[in-house]
Length: 189
Image (cartoon, rainbow, N blue to C red; front, side, top):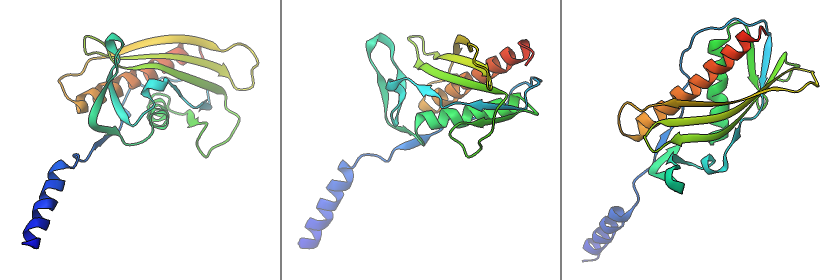
């Protein structure tokens, strides 16, 4: 009788347990190479809007309401993940240029300092992923004003689901790397 009760209680507890979360990460994507005359670029810590800085994946911030995933989580803190993947995207697009992050182990005087502030990175009312970022670039030791720009990029998920939402976010982050590489190439740096 006790054994039956123990099995029954164990079964009920297992039925009430929350499902295990699924963990996701952004991925670097290939892009076109831009040739610049820089030997090294230091990416400063990426600023991330507070509403994004959480383990849950923010699906949308439309209509003044945050929509978070229930059992899907980021596999690492958002700011660190953005920094890691964005650095990898830049390395792909700027062959011959060492791109390193401020939070990494490498410390040197860079030719260019790159700062990025992510103000929005979620789906709008139409379902498109919107990446709104401010980007500032200045030459290593220069005390002159930085070349600062605001970039708004979008990527459309090809179908519903968290995996495709994350894939579209990866595409938008790759577009940001494309835009930065293009700016550097156009400025002749």
